[in-house]
Amino acid sequence: MPSNLYLATTYLKLLRGNTALLAQLSEAFGERFERVLADDFIRGDDIHTVFSIAAEQGLDSWILEFGDKISIASHGPLGFAVLSAPDLHTAMQVLVDYTVIRSSTYRCELRHDGNRMEFVTIDQTGNPLIGRWLIEADLFVTQRLIEAIMAHPLGDNAVVRFAYPKPSYADRLQAYLGVSCEFDAESNSLSIPASWCRISSPLSDPESFNTNLQKCRELKFSLTDQKDTAEMTTLAFSRFFEARISGRTKAGELPRLTQLARDNHCSPRTFARKLEQQEQSYKSLLEACRQDYARRLLSTTHYSIADIAALLAYQETANFVRAFKTWFDMPPATWRRQRSITQ
Image 1: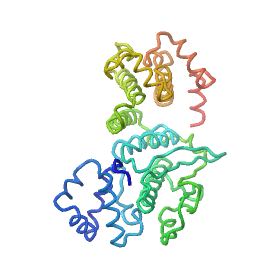
Image 2 (image 1 turned 60 degrees about the vertical axis):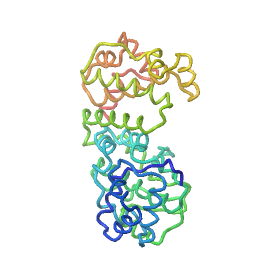
Image 3 (image 1 turned 90 degrees about the vertical axis):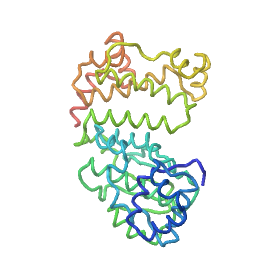
Image 4 (image 1 turned 45 degrees about the vertical axis):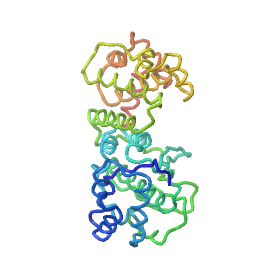
């Protein structure tokens, strides 16, 4: 398993309820054990040690053993951002974008297949046992977060698929999840009706959502390669818009390419070339960030179109309206009105 992988120790602290397993881990790690649990993340070889000892102790399913002990707080700002998102699609996209702040042992994607949407989990460990346990845990957590937004179990409308053979505990796992489970599938995924994406979250809280989403961005940037120029640029734009929306400042200009290059200790030409190597540009990243904030402000606030244009640093409201029509093939007022009808 790659040594640079990490997993939030919040999930491992659940082990404290299994005294036999805890004793074995304490013996294996020695005096390091408490320090390992005290850190924010457990990494590579230590992850392998934990799961190997759990298997030796006869544990057949991580989630069947510890799933009931997982709470929203276990996921930190990611969990709170998901629950306070304006709708189910935004919540699932947040999970995809920021799973990395909890673990790098898997990555996630959203895929549309006809009238279904699939939340796909892709193993990064290369270890059949560890990968299986972590994938089951991730799909379980995703299901529970969706059920919190839906305010009812997913039941027959959802299907969980696993890209590995049917394990001995398959019937118990299906009963525990409460949805149909399939094995030997092409991918590990949770499939739900695509129409659910439009469902508004009864737990939606714009202030909490924006606050926790910003925390997610900060954590993601701290964990990813500092040479990720596109991520750094997006974060700079996000900080700027968050400051304006929160009322901390109305003055100032958008972070310019020259400023970003200076912060990155390089010339504007070099900075632009780094973005190009990531198939991005200053303009495309700014437009994507503005588009994201425009959707959120229109759907979660009562700001006027002119106010939103100003918050997004457009010199003229007409410029914002023109850009929005390019993104969504309709004016922002029409988009907001249609959205309110479907909610």
